[in-house]
Length: 491
Ligand SMILES: Cc1ncc(COP(=O)(O)O)c(C=O)c1O
Image (cartoon, rainbow, N blue to C red; front, side):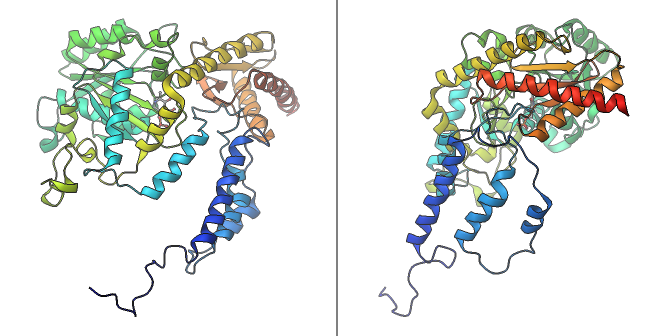
């Protein structure tokens, strides 16, 4: 057809009117983003967003366009300085990954492709299959295994538990729901919050998740577990799953996965392993024995965005027999059916999970794994564990600080403990110390409770931390502790 001279030039009003000007802005932003990572240790780890900045951002929903240059300035001036801080070498709060410069590039390219990874036959889906296959090989899963990239371990735990329920319930869960069957499952008291949330969400309720006590090393007590299973069976309930931890969130403890695999095999239960960050020790030869037995799990949760430093978000659920996952989520209506062409390529990721539209997480995962290689990533994990041991030994030089839990991995939980204060006052004191250190911008530890007592928790999943960063942390604990002690005793 002949071109109509009245047709507008081939550009969309939503694309840049001047691509050269856009390129200049984009390059400037890329440079600013790279600067940020190159100098990740400059400035405070964290600072709260001031009221005036909040107010400047809180405009009514924009009706008219804003030039990209102005947006870039706002981003750099008003948003980037008020980040969580997990790219900084002294961020050790909760369990955060540090990110990488390469991951940032992959994120940018992913937006350029703008793939919808719910399904169909395109390269992004192929890449997801490849990275999931790599993960299966890390854990020694058989050829039948598969999985899905998800937002994070909370979602992966939900998937693992839902798949377990489907296969152990003994009736068609998809058609009938729980149908009043008293299904129960087991996790240690150190299990992650997302596990109990999953039970709330799948309609079994939190009480269907039995809390098993731990031994002195904070590992699930297998004798207590056996007793609980027997008690549930004799009360007419139906045990279906054990949720093991490979790296508990409080202190990085590993349940006895091989022992649990034996027990689950003997009892006919599904073994789900929550290895959100801890399972990644599989990539560090000297630490890999901690996950011995994981190869016998029915499903495994882990994150790429924590200890592998892929930019948020990127988690994964692996299932020993992918066909079981398809049983739970598979099936598509006519408009999504595959009859060749772009709609082909079975199974679609949407047959493995609940989402139909999904982002291209696999690109940043693939990029990070190819750019870094698992050897270097494993070495960074091992270095963090060595730093945790170093920090423990440095803290032990100060009588006023006690180590609150065994340092078995990368997490150090400690308590500033001046004489003359009761436990409640010490809880208050340690909470104040953590807030004061965060507010000072020197470092970001967080808190947790061990045996009911509030502790300063330092979780080292940070490839930028250097050994001397921990000396700064100790100085900060001692000086914040002194100040908080005077405040509490003066009050
Ligand atoms: C053991 C464990 N499980 C699950 C989660 C939840 O992971 P996410 O934040 O990726 O949802 C965490 C988070 O720290 C965790 O440590």
